[in-house]
Image (tube, rainbow, N blue to C red; front, side, top):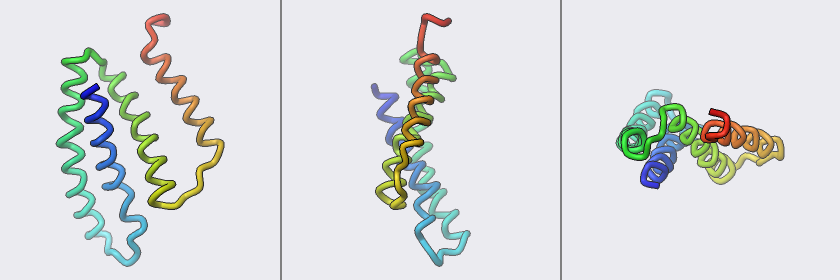
Length: 113
């Protein structure tokens, strides 16, 4: 659970670092880059321990950690895009997410190993 919470927190920082500046009209590119790097620093402070704890302590494989991260990233980005960027949410996104959850199922399933 600690791995998942750290990955969730790191993805919040990552999403802000990568996308918050899209709504900042008039910012020069250098400013967006420097601020994004400053935010990303905190992402790495959380992401590195999350992966180390998950890999060593919980027995996740590297592939499983990456899949967990991608699912968390999509959830965090969805909230961010709708709330901050004010982008509409379409039904096709739900279909895409369902297919990704299918990938997660196969990644963690012992029946197909």
